[in-house]
Length: 54
Image (cartoon, rainbow, N blue to C red):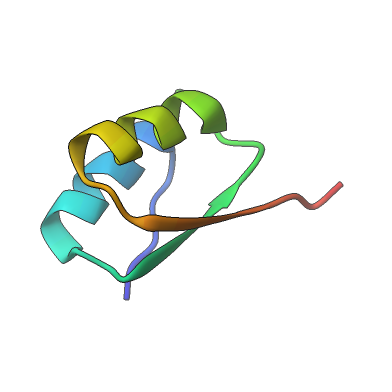
């Protein structure tokens, strides 16, 4: 459906695209994954799967 470059972009894309589920990489630039997850749950609650390449 879409991709985001960083944590801030994730929030904007979720609000615009309204996906059923979001995958987040643990390593994100600009806004870390925990801050992004907190904002997602507060502003636009969405199911989230967190992944790590390490």
